[in-house]
Length: 126
Image: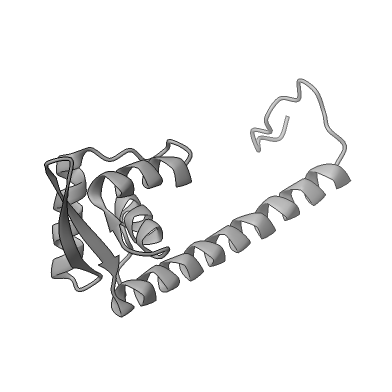
């Protein structure tokens, strides 16, 4: 549980946190939730699902035939929920640190007069 998730794994677990899903639905929901920044192809999805299943983070949850095609369903396991929670907390912590640094930078920039076309200091006395 100490490892960081890949972006695709993060999104897959996030989709499955809402409930059981089949492959195509996972692909569609990942694209929607990530606002298109994460796109999965069928082969990469199933490779990721196999790895996540081997790690105990997801489990197969049945199969059904729809329009002559098999739909394999997956669900998030308790361990998968714990890993997603830990990853989310780690991301929130990193965001808080970055926000604090950016806020400090904004305050510093607001407190110092801006000089246009200023040359960098060389450190040499002239």
